[in-house]
Each structure stands twice: as structure tokens, then as C-alpha cells.
Length: 397
Image (tube, rainbow, N blue to C red; front, side, top):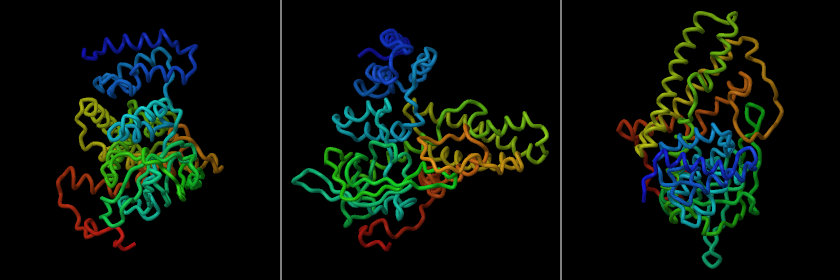
């Protein structure tokens, strides 16, 4: 097979644009055609939205399509599908699962959510209690349990679900991974109102939900390994977002400093300088992470970047509130809403300050990530644990 080069990709992009002009082609039709042309994620295999090309060449495709005014797939709205479900399905899915789920996922026709955390299994996810029991005659699993902090569940068609299938095994070993249809009978989604007044999170109750065995991802009892793939990609997608220089949370603070000199003090200036530099270092580290991923050499930066993302968002939003003084204490709207996405930069300072409090919890708590970095990156001794070899059913709860 001839190697995929940037010139060949550009020729393919131009063929796509000629056959499906963005100005006259309906958005979803253009996105489907882009996927079928292998230009969705070029490093994926042929027939699955890619061409088996180096991941680094995706930027070439994206730049050419952006210049032509082509629509994107609204990645913020479908981030869980793109950043978590897709790479996990690619790694563990059957060929039938890949062909069924990846195209509508990338186009945005089907939104995904993550059914992992539970009221008694958040930071210690492996302690999860949601049960799945196999009906061998029917080839289906019956699932009962409760999930919590589920972003986008109110908009989702599918959920990536981990459930306990063998309580007699230690907690990391008796887990299986499923793809759950959120429209199936027995799936109930309830809003969780946050400190912002909104409910982008949900709790999900699963009562007698029937999942066909064909929607199991990976082997029975091997769900923890599959889930770790999801979690690794989640941290990369949260901490490794591409932003321009002086973009993200630091942008509105820097703008307010420049535009409103009456707010300035020496102490706030020093804090702003420190945080501006840290934000720029984090941005460049994120760029290095993306380059390593493009070269097929992912490093430990995913967990480290997620830790930095949470801390910086909280410190920068706190500085912004202080800089604005009384104005910073205002809040635009306490209306109960169920948004499709989190919009940090499009809202006011009060929203950013309140919403940033969740950054150190979602996507893996900062405490757990510090343990991961200490043990798996720095090689420090693990904390003593006496529960890893006990059967889950014998654990105290």
C-alpha cells in the first residue's frame, strides 16, 4: 500500500469539497461524506473514518477544511463520544460494533454519555455495585443499579457502562463493560442541579435494563482493563485541549486587566503574571502531549495535564472575581437549565468561578490523579491496601 502523505490527503480533501460543496451541501451529509472519505480521524483504519495515516496529518486536513468553510461536528457537544467512547470501541470492539457505532458517533447523530461513577463508587470506581446478570438462553444481560454525575445523559442515545458481573471475584476483576441504549426500558435519567443553578449532570437509574451480549465491549470480567482505556483517553481529552496563546480561562482576566485600568493593584498584577505564565506553560505542554500522541508515543502527561487544568481554572477564576470586585459577585441567571455543553468563556465571571469547582472532581479526582502520578510515573511506593485480593462481596460497605 502506498504511504499516505500530506499531498495525497490534500488531494482527497479537494475531491471531497468538489463533490460536496460546503455552501450547498446539508451539514450532516457533508460530515457523512467526510467520514466515508477517511478524513474524519485519518489515523483510524480505512472504512472507519480514517486511512491508517499518521495522526499528525489530521491537522493538515482540518486546516484545509476550515479554510474552505466546511462545517465541523461540534466536538464540544459530542466530546464524550469522540474522546472516550470512540477510542475504546476502536481498541476493544468487534468489527460489527466499530461499523455500527463510529460513523454516527463522529457525525454527531448519536450523543454518548459515561455510566461509570456511582454514589458509593466515585474515586474508587472499582468498588461499583451496579449488577449485570446474563440470561444465556436469551443472550442478554439484565442490569440493575445507579450511576451518578453523568454528563449529557439527558441528551445521550448511548452510554458506556461498567457493571459487576461476578461479585465473588476481587473488585477489579469481576467487572464487564457494555454499550447501553439510553432509550431502552428501565433507563431513567434525573437531573442533578449544581451550584451554578444548571443541571448538566444527571443521575441514572437502571432497573431491569436488558442489554444484548452483542453490546458487550471486551471479554466478560475484563471490563476494568477496558475502562482504564476510557479513563486514560478522558484525561487526555480534558487536559490536552488545543487552545490559542492567551486562550481559555486566562483570556477574560487578561482582557479585563487591559481594558479596565481602574481595577489594577500591584498584588493582583503579580498574581496575574504568575498565572499567565503557568497557563502558557500548560498550553505548550498540551501541545507536546498532542505531538507525542501523533507520533504514537503517549506519555504520562494526560494525568498531569488534567491536574494542572483543574488547579489553574480554579485559581484563575478566583483571581477574576477578585479583580472585578463587587461586579465579580454578580451572577447572570440562576434559571434551572439542562445545557448540552459547558461554556466557560462564553459566560460571566461568577459562572466560571462556580463551575471551575467541579474540575478537580470530574474526569478523576485530583487526589486519585496525584496517586497515579506518584505511583506510575514517579515510581513511588503504593499506599498499603488490604482490599485488592478480597472478593467484592466480602468488602465492607
